[in-house]
Image 1: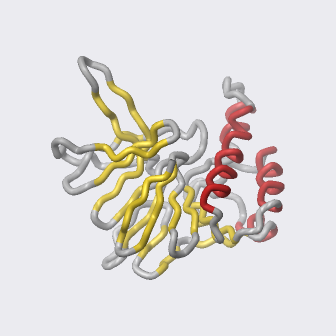
Image 2: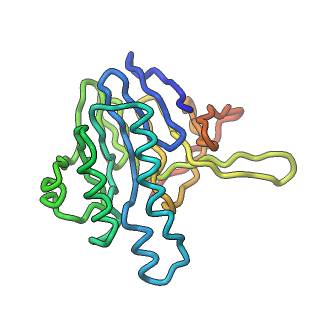
Image 3: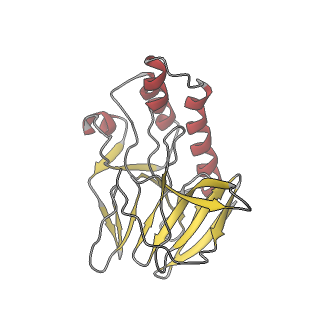
Length: 223
């Protein structure tokens, strides 16, 4: 269900939902939930099932119940759009939680920080914790290992013939890990393996290391 990894003498676990648990700090990292996106699409006639709204909350609850963190950090793009009915659901969901909640602001987080403060969520631009830097956009910082989101990383796996499948993934380099997008209907962006990188694909209820058999030129990622 969760795949362990050591980074700079710290212990982390990657969950199949796309969350990352930091054991030493009892901290759960979740990126790109994009709450409100389903309701936003439905408002303009998109054929998106209403059940997708609740699925985000159910999966967050499952990951929280599994790891029992003391702190929950949303790594940006928590709420996709302006206020809609999903904010009320989120507000009620937060009130039921006893853990500390922090939002590292992302480009889609257009709501006033006062809205989050009113329900007990602290909003920051970035976080430095020891030798780790937490941001929404991937960043380079001398001496710090960067955890980020934003890209919605995926890996394309090819089988026999022309068969292929694209899977969301954790994408790790020597000084950075990009978390997969957590939310439903968020889309993905395929990244090519770079030299020395590690890829961990989300497959059903498991996180699977992907063998990189040959190094390919890294594609510049933009979103």
